[in-house]
Image (cartoon, rainbow, N blue to C red; front, side):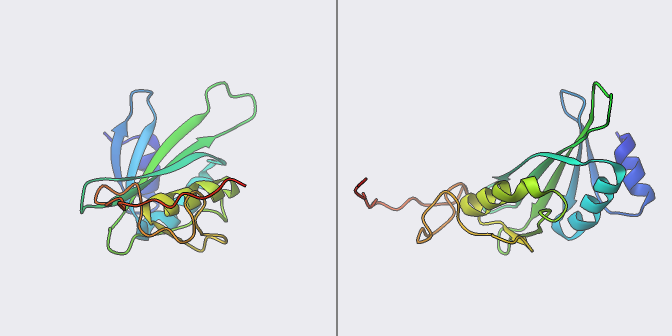
Amino acid sequence: MLGRLSAWIVQHGVIHRSLGFDYQGIETLQTKSTYWHSIDIILYVYGYNYLRSECAYDVAPGGLLASMYHLTRIEYSVDQPKEVCIKVFTPRRDPRIPSVFWVWKSVDFQERESYDMLGIYYNNHPRLKRILMPESWIGWPLRKDYIAPNFYEIQDAH
């Protein structure tokens, strides 16, 4: 089922796939990382001025990685703002997605967390470095094929 936003994006010639609507009626779109930059600019121009959240997940062991963006169109005197969810898929071998930091500044720590936990590299992010794990940590803990080390270094708290 093609939603209103998906139909509007099709008119502008951007490749994506509509995943329909979730249980709250929020339209969900799917795209590849190569088309994400075009879609994020279009959505911002269309009025989606607030990035509610970004998160990432491992689709399947050895499969794709996904980054999800929840966007809201906030307008004056509107009780129910319009929302959209975008799923951006990237290959596991070289997981790169264009950062939307320059469009929505609130994504800063969220993209850094996705990088830290899943190893998705967000191109043009100004401070892309580990945020939860130590800089010396090897691997990406939330990937389904991650093998936890059999040792942990315990540090003194003082």
